[in-house]
Image (tube, rainbow, N blue to C red; front, side, top):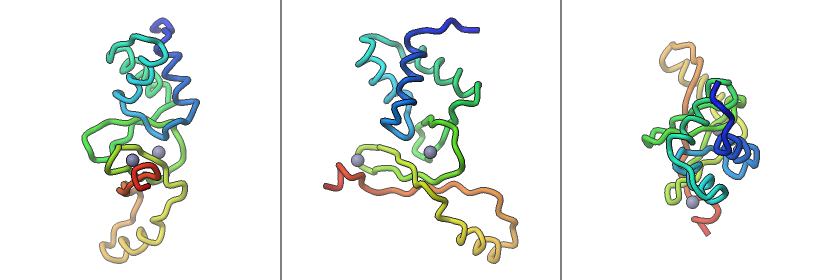
Length: 126
Ligand SMILES: [Zn+2]
Ligand SMILES: [Zn+2]
């Protein structure tokens, strides 16, 4: 077992604040540094990997080459701001009808999908 570290505690706290829906390692590192003063990339990465192994966090891939982590939750879609990169949750699955349509068009039994909406967040769109 790795020793609990201030970085691990701070990463846990950041996920609990729900200040962001999903965090990249870089975003976590910036916030951890602003509260603790110093932290290195590898200790943030280790904290996140630990929580992922414990099943607390899920890694999500929104197709922009940047791994993000979110608190494990039921299936939902995401929307990403094309200007600042902020990611938010689309709180309901908006694709149930589309799955039926995909089934009709392909004959596949649809068991999953991954969709990322793009747009401008409230701040960037103002
Ligand atoms: Zn934005
Ligand atoms: Zn999410």
